[in-house]
Length: 247
Image (cartoon, rainbow, N blue to C red; front, side, top):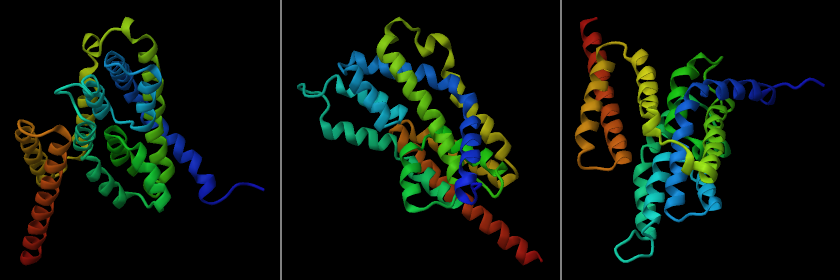
């Protein structure tokens, strides 16, 4: 009996989502290796280093936690609560990502939990921009494929770094630090259509730059994102009201 319904549509969408992330693999590998080297230098074992990638899967938070673990339990060092609070603030932006995706993708409660666990900046960006090319919009299969594409590469690269990272060149030496910013810029530019989107992008960028001087990165993105969304809603509502008044 041939497969039919949602089950038969899952895997084609999954592999399309998986493949759409391949261009970002090159930027993922060296930073996962760098995280592993940092974690090992902070005293974590290969198993502990790998388990953090398997369970946390959040690059910036893992870097921060690995650095804080070096002073954990020492006088003046980081406390367990401090490590948790730091990683929470760095990942606060995922609240916005989740709210945004919930408007684009119809998910059941179990699917929401799974998608939330593997959500990253890169997966969110690619699903938001490229997911519109999917028949009927992005599905759970497409989202999960994009997320697990990076999950597999990140964890394989973590293991590589944990086992032999000391003999590998640093990401700075390879010059790969520009890959992710350029990738996100490439995703952003096609979305700047009209005065409202350009104005919101500029205002959000300036707000993020200013807030970054005094606040942690994750909180900066959260506040700038919320502010940009409110500004966009206000400008769009004002534009609509002017058009209706002139009709």
